[in-house]
Image (tube, rainbow, N blue to C red; front, side, top):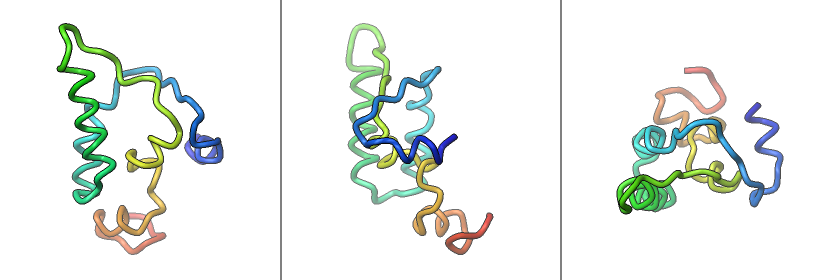
Length: 92
């Protein structure tokens, strides 16, 4: 699962089975509105999906990119817990 992926080197490529980035990044920005990494990835995603004659994929990605921008990969961070309204380390 996610814990196993988190142990891989940051430059490891991740090939997901579906195009989820377009739906995930607005949620990631809501979770961490001040994240410059999420904002940067949103700009990149918009160019990939809408900046060409046909939409381009946002895959593959890397473990490092997911660790930086995917809130599901960072559920143990205090900023994520705070946004969900729970104390760090507790279930929402």
